[in-house]
Each structure stands twice: as C-alpha cells, then as structure tokens.
Image 1 (cartoon, rainbow, N blue to C red):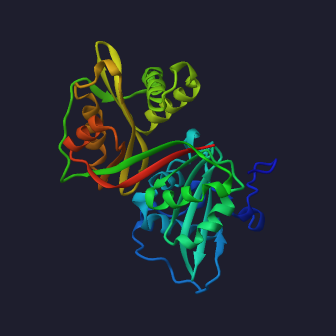
Image 2: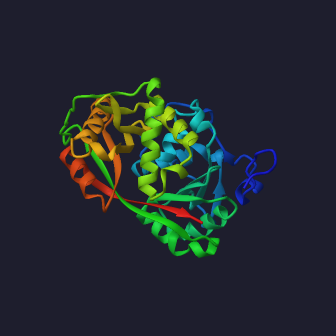
Image 3: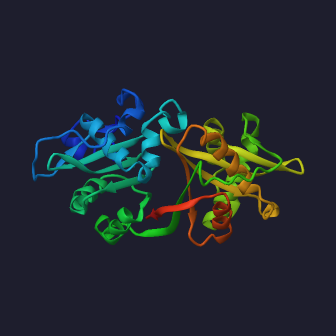
Length: 322
C-alpha cells in the first residue's frame, strides 16, 4: 500500500520511515563482497522480534546472499539493474526480521504485486504475514520450504490461490554442461523486439491457457525489449524467429534463464536446447552456474534440460493470488 506521494504505507514503513522502496544506489560497495561474508556481524542478542528496513541493508543483503540460490530474483533486482527502466518501475519494498541479533527472514514486495518471501525460522511468519497484508499481493514465488507454510495460512490474508505451479529448480555448471549448438541460433538485437514480443504473447497464452487476444501486447513488447537488453537468444527457421530464451536474473555467482519457448510448429528440432546452450556458453565463462525452472509435469522440457547437463537443485512454487 502506498501514500499519495508514492511512499510505502505498510506497518513497517509507518514506524520506520527509512524502510521501503530502495534502489541499487543504496547498496554501495561491490556486490561480490557480500558473497565473501560467511556469517552476519554479531549483533545485540535479543528474544524480541525486530522489524528492519534499509537502515539494516547490509545485514539484509548478507542474509539474502547466504541463501542466494533461493533468492535469485530479489538479489538481481537489488543489484546491477537499477538503470533498467523495466526494473526501476517495479522496485521492491524490502522488509527484514531480526531475532537474537541476526536476520532470520526477508521479504520483498513489489508495486506490481510480486511477493518474494524467505525465512530461516518459521516463528517469524505471523509478523511477515501481518506486514504483507498491507500490500496488494498478486503473485507469490519462492522455494516450497517457504511458500508451502504461507499457503496454509493464506486465509488470514483473505486471499486464495487461483493458479498454482510447482517447478523443479535446476542448475548446470562447467563440469556437467553438455552443449547442443544448433544452426540458426543467434543473440537477439533491438530489431527483433516485435518478433520476440509475438513469441512472448504465444508463451503467455499457452502457459496460462488464455486466448492470445487476451494477452497485453504492449506488456509483451516491453518484456521483449528487456530480454534483449539482458541478453536473449533466438532461433530462426524459414525466415522466421521461432524460438527464444532469455536471461531473467543475474547475480555474481549465477545466471537464471527464463522465457524458454519454441513455436509449436517447430518443436522437436532441438531449438530449445540450442538457445539455452547459447546462453550457457556465454555465461558459464564468467559464472559458476546457470539455473532455470521447469514445471514438474513438463517432461519434454525436463528431458531437454537433462540432456544439456542440468540437475535438480531444489523445488519452487509460483502462485497467483486473488
């Protein structure tokens, strides 16, 4: 929830005016430095739950980095992409929870309604739900260890699940990677934006079972432009762009792939393997791992990623709330 001036008006921000929407300028220092910290600095031990915002930003970032593979999207949005118009328009309100001197939970809540919660200790969940109540929540995403207990208490927020997806969270590294280069695959450029937007519209319609006419074309075009800036790859056949894969998130240790889609008339030709291979080849030169999510019931995609050397690292859940 926001005041008329755009400031966050949740229970944390009302009591702590420095909490709320932050940008990468607030972080300071080198992002990689956070990953070199094995533990949080010692704080004053207390049994009282303390809510914190960006006055404790270093501690919040160290917490997220300890669990970096479970907080890729949030970390990516807090780092490095602050100059991206796509990211600037949807920065998260970052809320943290401290027990006995240490951060034990963090949640990011976006203006668009994305909700990315994470906790180490489940006893802070009531406070997290109390704070989340003050926001418009449309999508909750995260690892099942975190999301499943929240879903059990979702009625407390007067919300229900209208879409529920369970994914395998997978990774590949330089050792396991088995590239499958494919002719006709190249990096996307600005001139490809409209063609990628068309593929994204088809992806949305198929993924959510909607008529393509109901998909907002302008949103798909903005998404395509963002993908191109971040480093998308595409495949061409018969003079048409028929497959794509994009970088959805990037942090110092890994890159996360998303929006992998092949036009239905060109499936079974190895194009998904080709575009994913191209991203992996680029990013594994400088990153330890590349990750992606795949629906547990999508057997063809799972087989394709396994053939490239991807292995399951955990499970993930995404829910649309209403």
